[in-house]
Length: 511
Image (cartoon, one colour):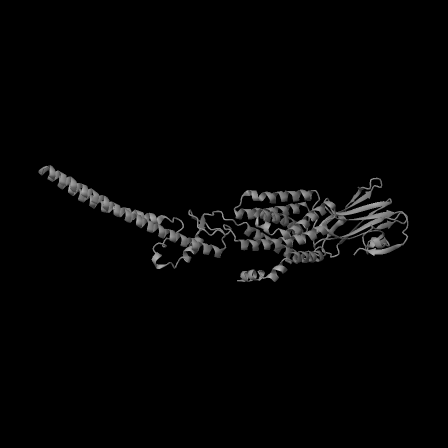
């Protein structure tokens, strides 16, 4: 009843006009909410919401995997429902519609009638032959005792007996044919009624194929051995589009905030393109192969985000485990769907490409997020405060890189705060790059890491660390904060000058 109410509501012109804007509203609203909340502080409820999206997508993809394996087959449940629909036949046709499976052998009743009629003919014929033999015996007797005229009379009598026999046989054959035709017509009418009842039953239970094939067989019941109607396919694809959209929206935000290099940003851009494309792929999700491929991609990215919250560690071993679990779920769906193995080619390729991308440091190190960074001098470790050049307007709005005007031989510090979920531990490293004035290319000059750069997650503003360099020459620098031997979390670019600033210094603190 609820579905009928929704369908009627959607048929109204006003609702149809508003419905066109639903995907855009849902997309912008969900993306905005995720942008504000995720990455600032990830709570357990955030993981549970994403898990609900993933679980919903799992069940929907399983439902979309349904297919009618035996189009000529009928399950016992369908036949029982069909028989129940035929419980009240017309009184004159009760005897004809009595068989429980009228569609399996529709011509059988006609054959049985023909056989019975032929049997009646075979019973009547011996009596006729007995009369003929009696005539012949009489004719022979007379022929022995009488002259030629008697023989002619006997022959005439025999001919008359033969004609009578042929006439009787013709009458019996005509009656048999009439009975056979009548039985065939009755069987045909019964088959038509059975098909009508099956069509009505099939419509109620949601089967698309409603005709009973001539060679129908009873098959073992499986829930996924069916063909969904167009109405149910539309409902399933709409729901899976919603679940995929929720996962895409959250993952784009999380991976974007964790991406600190161009390579990792390309993966985020790919996710963003798929996020937008998801709004136009509802019809495509009817294809089980397309739905399974998207489910594999989203499953791997989601588990790579969720598992570190559970084990409190990140690294290749956990990403590889995420990939295995996601691909294992695809194998599970394929197993219960009874589809061909070729359906797993796309998920396998996606899993391999993601592992290669992680090895190449193209996958952002979620859930780590670079919250704040400062290039400065005269650092105070107790308060995490230092002197920075008083920024101009362009530097304040991010259109110009910060500057560091050294005083004498003071050290240059780079401070960073990295957010991580509670209890998560990860070792960081700093990579210092110097821009060659001749080529304008940045070259790696120092890779700095130590046991003191192991972050402990849970602080909303991030775990604070710092690095420093002495006797640094003037020029442009880029410092990258990365997961040790892994992908870059974020970076900062600044320019060093060997002269005092014109506008003086201001004191800044890393929150």
